[in-house]
Image (cartoon, rainbow over the protein chains, first blue to last red):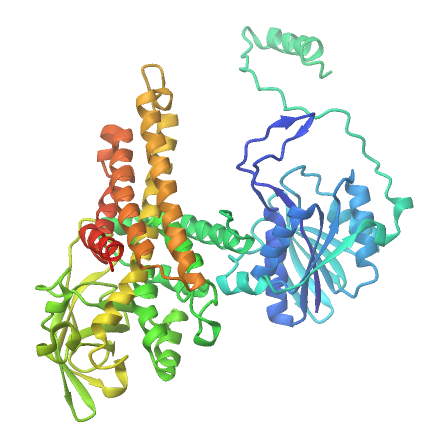
Length: 254
Length: 380
C-alpha cells in the first residue's frame, strides 16, 4: 500500500506571537509538526503495519521544515519529500498546485492530511488537493479501516459521528481522536539520519503558469482585545430597542 | 568549537522532554509520596530505546553516543530524579562494565537483555562497612569446582529488587586487599541470591534502593566479569563514567527546580507586583541560571570526551562535583523563592531539594571527587 502524508511545520501553539515588519515574527520561535498532521503520520504508520507498503511524507516549506520531515522519518516514515518554498509567496491555491504536480504521477492508495493547520487554520489544502486529483475525500476522520479496495471511515460531524464507505484511492483529513501519535524512538532517530530526503525546487516542476496566488494579504494584525461586557437594564422592551440601536450604531452589525 | 547540539541530539532531547512531561510528571509527586517504583514507566522507556542508548545495535542498543545518554538522564531528572537514577544505574553502572569487560557471550546474553530493556541492571559495590573505602569489602567469593560461592551482603543498591542482573564485587583473595577483588554477573534467580530490606530514603523515593544478600550464592564460572583480581579496577573505571550520569541528574534536578522557581516568581504578587521584579529574587535567579549553565557544559564536555575516546575521568569527577553542588544549591534557593509554599508538599520544589542531596553523595561523595581530581592533578 502506497501511503502519502501531507505535513506542515507550524508554530508551536504555546509560543507568543509577535509582529515584525507587518508579518508574524519567526525569531526564536519553536516549530513543530502541525498536531493534526501528526495524527495523519501516525495513521499512515498504523496502516503500513497492517497492510505493508511505504509511507511517504510530503511538505512544502522552507529549509527548517526538514526538521519536521526528520521527525516523521524518526517516527518510522520511509520517505520524505520537501518542495522548497523559500522566497515564495504561496496561498492554499498555489500550494495545492505544487502538491498536485508532485503527486499526480505517483502511485498511491491513500493520502492522509491534517484536518487543519494550527497556524493559519484554513483547512483547505486536503479538500482542494482531492478536487485537483479528482479523487474522493473524507474530512475530520476519527476512525479508519481498510478492507480490500474500500475504506470504512468514521468522521466527526460537529460532535456527531458519520460512517462513510469509500473506494480507494481516497484523501482523508485527520481529526483529534483518530489515534495517539507515537514518540520517535531513539533508534528511530538514529536511523532517520540515514534515510534520504528528496528535495525539489519549484523550477523543476515547470508549473510557473499556474502558480499565481489567488489571495492578497493587505494587513496582518492582532484581534482587538475583548472589552468588558455590558448588561442592559430596564424592562424587556426597552432592552430590545436599546440592543437594536447598539447593534446598528456601535457594533455596526446590522 | 561548536556548542550547539546536533539536529539529532535536539530531536532526542525534545522526545525525552515530551516523554518525561507526559508520562512521568503527572504521577511524580504521588510516586514520591508512596515510595512507589512504577515498572510501567520503565517499559515505556524500553519501547523508546532508552535502556541501551550508548550500546551498539549488535548488542540491542540504540547505537547512539554518551552525550545522548547524558541528555536523556538530564531530561528525565528535570521532571523526576528517581527515573533519572534508575536509568543511570542501569546504563552506566550495570551496562558499561559488561560492555567494556564482558566476553562476547556475556554481551550477547546480558548486555543485549539490558539494552533492550527486557532486563534491568544494578551495581553492587557498597557494604555496611565499606563505602568510600570499597577495598575493605567483606563479601567473599570462593571457587568450588565450576562455581563461585558468594557470601555477604551489599547495601544501597539502586534498582534492587527490580533488577534482573546484578554486577557484584567480591573479595576472592583477602591478602591482596583491593587487588583480590573480583567482579561477577549475577542473575536474580541464582540460588542463594536474595533481596533484603528496602531503604526508606530522604529523596529519589520512587526509585528502589535495597540490600542484596548472598548466602552460598552459586555463580557459574562463566559469569566471572573480567579477570580474577580485576574487580577493583572494573569498579573504579565504571564509576569514572557513572559519575557523569550523576552529574546529568544534578543538571536536570537544578534545571527543573529553576524552571519552577521562575514560573512562580513571575506569578507570585507581593507588595503590588510580581516578586520577579524584585532584585533580591532576580539575583537569585541569575546565580542559579549561571551555575546550571556551567554544570551542563562540564557534564556535556565529559560525555563528549568519552565519545571522542579521550580521557574523561577527571572531567567526569569535576562535572559530578560541580553539578551535584549546583543541584543542591539551586533546589534550596528554589524553595526560598517559593517561601512558605515551597516548604509544603503542595508544590514540587521540596521534592527537588530532597532529591538533590543524593547527587552529592552517591557514586563517590563530593570529597571523593576532590580526591580523584587532585590525585590526577598532582600525578607525576
